[in-house]
Length: 241
Ligand code: ADE
Image (cartoon, rainbow, N blue to C red; front, side, top):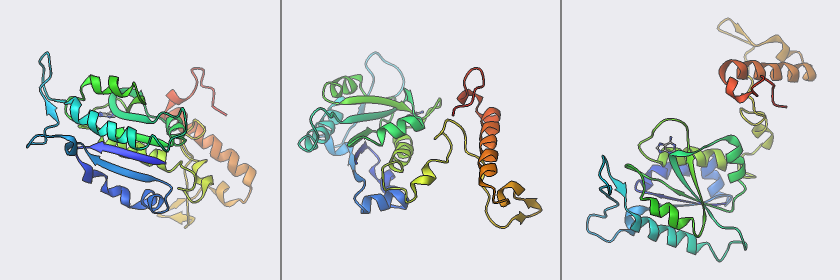
């Protein structure tokens, strides 16, 4: 998978050198390019923002640098892309569709993802309108709260998507039994010692009875989901299979 990020804070993404995603890059499973939006400006101050037409507080990101960087990114990969597979350009935004595990799964199947990190009061609307003529565009929100810019949201998305790219996580079974994979929150986990500070591991986990353990874990998932995230269950409280 090829991932490109456009940002005015390129060093923010230096941490993608470490951990599982760093290894995935070394192994060639994920190719990453981080692009400084200011490199696509042509004035002495490398200006990326200006006052909003119509008035109002804050600044809006200018269309020209975005146009130039997106031209470069969308044109450069076009020769390698299979016919009919438009690249996907994602702009993190509190006004977007909420990011979910299902979305992460679907994005992990893409050949190329381009992330555009907005700052200030947002990006000139014509950038979205223009890029939509040559790529698929998605506005994605991390939730109902406001961040100062898209960088943190993009980092979270790349981590969630990257670990689902085949080969990135060593043991694929570990991707199955976790929160949201079956529509439920994950069950509690324990390791040795069997007793710690007077707290015991639930005896069923020491029983060796795999059927009973699986049943207990599922019950824990359902109980936790009902208590913490009833919105994940159907209106009638039915549990996803
Ligand atoms: N940028 C600012 N707030 C955001 C949010 N909640 N999700 C994604 N991008 C954002």
